[in-house]
Length: 380
Ligand SMILES: [Ca+2]
Ligand SMILES: [Ca+2]
Image (cartoon, rainbow, N blue to C red; front, side):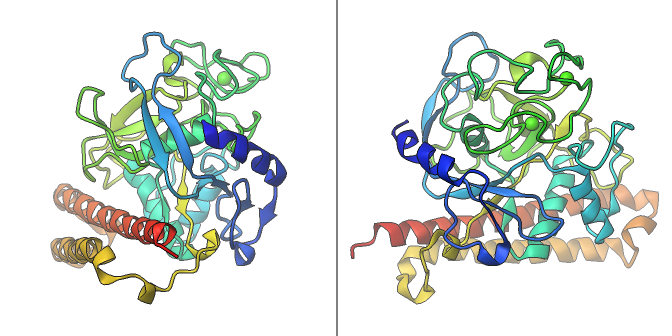
């Protein structure tokens, strides 16, 4: 936790400083920015190390025992859970496959979007990346816990006990409850409770949040310790974090782990992957100029990137292949005109396209990390 003493004063100094995207250069931890009018507000999170997992003892199912994780580069995380207003902007712009999730009459606007599968969320991320030219993505599971803890090693960012002054949760046994400062039986408008020390709201409670990682039991090998996701890219179960307005209390701790089905939703007649407790938190990779480290690719010796460049080329080829198989199978039908008999087949193929796109995105992110780590460590 050594980094804390350095970081916290910086955060205090920069808390709430907002910059327009054009000025988004050399962004210091704590800086808040947005890449467009309808884009989610993002907060710059500092690089650093932390102990991931159960740091306070007690029996908590599926939490890691505790291992050190080091995140080498600053990155950005959405200040709030993605809202209905932000989701609806995607649909209005022709993105998100036109899918308009139900809000159960709890309210849209600044309520967190719910009833979104991992693949729905991925489509939103894809739309946002295309619209802004930036690399939006899910957080990895370890990034999520690092961001939620914000330097703390207690069960919650505010201490070891659940609190309605700090979080929207239910009766502790899986049913919504409004009491004290928590006035909401279901979802609350995002930002209704104080932020953590990184300036992030509602990491714990309100809606549970998808991350990139596939689900692994704690007994299944060793999780990554560098902030990267625990793959593979495609799997039947994804990790969700933070618990929700209606989950059991044990899922609201910063270290708590949960999972949800990720079978792939192609058409909205399959609801198995969607739930009214599940929402979206975004990450965005910061570009090198935003980290004040100008990168000229000519400066990088080819051997530094040759391995990852080969991976990127293979991922691009796989994406092209999967897309062409899907296009052939669709046979000229628009997405909403596909006959029911063909839907099942297309659903599987579309899932493969998303998986290929996702693996390409991850390979590109890894290339940036390799280049930045080379520049940081190279001799003067
Ligand atoms: Ca509540
Ligand atoms: Ca949350």
